[in-house]
Image 1 (tube, helix red, strand yellow):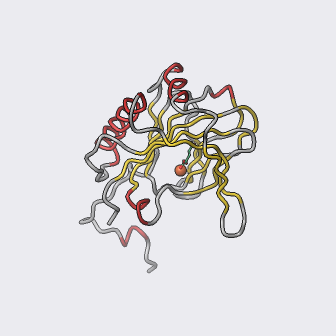
Image 2 (spheres, rainbow, N blue to C red):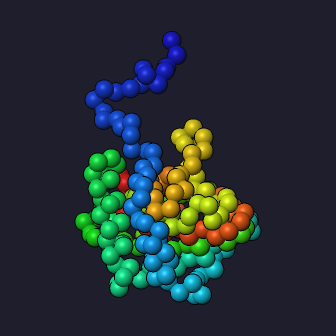
Image 3 (spheres, protein in one colour):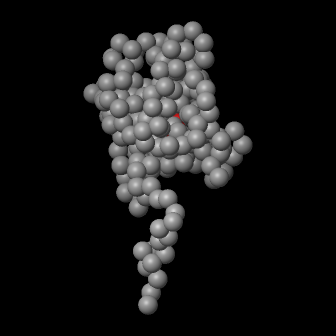
Length: 199
Ligand SMILES: O=C(O)CCC(=O)C(=O)O
Ligand SMILES: [Fe+2]
């Protein structure tokens, strides 16, 4: 008799069917609020990032700005962290730090910009990232391409909502990418809610 996965199941262990998928909330920010977030940073002074892997291949190309943790940005950050916490309580049930703030990064994609397949977790301080949150700040009609995508657990590709002001939350260990921007400009606001590393 061959060993099937079912035969290996142990009824005494807790299994979850619902924590892997991304969750999207629509109309969290209106168009004015999205514009105000973009105006929080001086559009002239971004860090131009081109990540290159050890083989010399470019893996990310975009302009990024860390959101200042004080001033007008603070209210947006606190609102988004509260939202992630709520979704976590209803859905992911991860252990998160009990704080109201987190690091948030504004990203601007122009023609040819993209972010290759990656996870948001890594070693050292990146080991504490538990949930990632992406806010779509641009009108989806103002750019072509630049889709936020996820690998499903069988490698199928799932696409996140593009609607302006929508918020997509996902486990930071999930593989995701942003496809190449073909035309226009896309802005996103990305944050990481931390907690004790998985064990
Ligand atoms: O811009 C996005 O939609 C996602 C960016 C991203 O994956 C990241 O900054 O880690
Ligand atoms: Fe990411």
